[in-house]
Length: 304
Image (tube, rainbow, N blue to C red):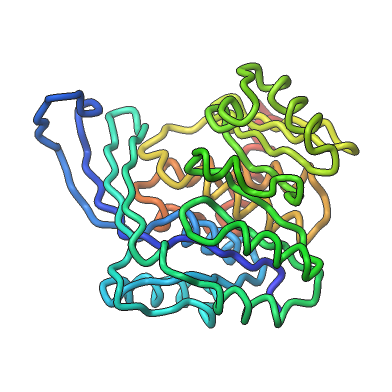
């Protein structure tokens, strides 16, 4: 049985290399264009599988997204509960600037279709030892959260995209909040990372907060832990999917080892490797590559 059930989006990413993010009223010529597999859910499922943890993906694609289903299968994801619909697959438009930073627009497509029967089927096979992972690119999240908790699962919520709908969900049922600084500010009204964590735990004391800070690393806060993990310095080509890579590797390593510090270290290394390659799903590293990267960094610290 899968250790993580991921109810998440699948998208076809249209990626434009641009000299800068387009401004209001501006027509901008791109310096490159490519199509990649993506969607926060797909990326995270692949990262979980690459990290060596069994994962079931729950969601939907259209006929134009069959290749996404084939890719997930090839990367080790169980797609038993991935539905093929008449609705076109979700689409994303990405701008990538010369520093590798991105700006993203999404159209939900099949991700916003009704998936209750798929969630029911996946949770009916759960043993209660799993983590149920969701993002905010799908429909029916409130029912999914409530059903997962009723089935005895822990719930991890990657609150992206952050909007009023995300904040209106039954957040008291969330076990792991996985957010970045922008999402943390929207959720709490705070800008200081420590204050964001304190505010979340003050309102939801039974939860844990995973606050990603880009080049400043990540904070983990819970009633039992107060941890920080620095980011690994690399030359970024494309930051798209780095957060998804981190999320997948963090949860997978946590499920396998029950060690928060090791999960943070492994996930930070995987995210660092991912930004050195173009694309989202295509940039997610293998576990062997992550271990080699960590061994190299440990060696450089020892002898440097």
